[in-house]
Image (cartoon, rainbow, N blue to C red; front, top):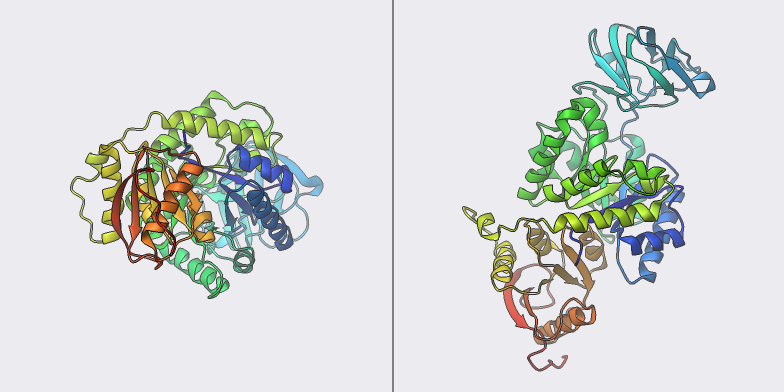
Length: 484
């Protein structure tokens, strides 16, 4: 059975180098995430080169995602690296403090915080483990009372309950990192903390400019982490190629209880808008130190699969965990098992739908035809991957194979739900290309002689864009075409 749900794995100290990348690809990684919050440009470029080499060695193309850091809304450092805050104690956040802090006050990396908060606001530090209530603001100082205490260490993040921090989504560092992402030819750029579609449009313009006319342009992924992003979700989706349901910071701002329903809503909206989705944060957290996941984690991953996410993501589990390969294997097994429970409702999906584009109509016609004829597979001869994307927005228990000569497209398709990309040269000889497509699918072991497959193709052949033909083929039952 071909796994439909894709796996994104974060690169870190526990998962770097040719050998470990090769093992992780064989275990099931489809996209590697380069976290630009850590490491240097040289580090990321070296990792990208090793990943490309490892993928080539096993005969696969995998995607690369450059994940931008975004604004550093963090506290400063402490003497000794950490302090303990007691419930009921007073604690000052001081934007002008340049020396290490203590249990009474600490500096701020985000100097604008005093302008963003007022008396009565609730501030959450270290992913909500520390809770402070603002007593008052005076100049650079925010006086707070500790409501939930505990250990607090250097540079932990700050969120305001309910959102409302004014930090821009793109920083000077992000702009430089976008140039690095273009240099290493990242297939996806994930933008942290966007508040509107305008944030994503600006990021896309910068990424396209950095890529220039010669390099492939990345797909833009919006990380939904701010409370302000929720009412702007439709605009963010329109300006993006996909979204990441970044449940960590989002949960801190809107509350843990609100996140499961938001996750389902976001995935549904994205699928309806023909956009990609990645579900992230603490999916297999216990496997940072344990060799097996908890039952709750298994249910969490399975639930995201059943919601219809394109991909599930591993963060610290692969970046710093003890079992980077085993956690990928475990996640892949969960996805496969959950996918057995898919509800296929192709007929219902197309009720009351109007298609205005020929290529989109062909894509959906291929799904409908393949389902009712009990075909073995669907194959899309594509240059951009758009036809495969439209097909992948619907649940169907048939694999979709995207056949393209474009390496950049193959790498992007690695993130599309239920789509397996293969390299296939295309010419203007239609019969020769279709014959080569059959032979490729048979050589890969996904179909055999006598199987029924549904093909989509654009005619005339050899020209990008314009899928306009649906063909039903019985594999191996007609003479091979001679190449032109």
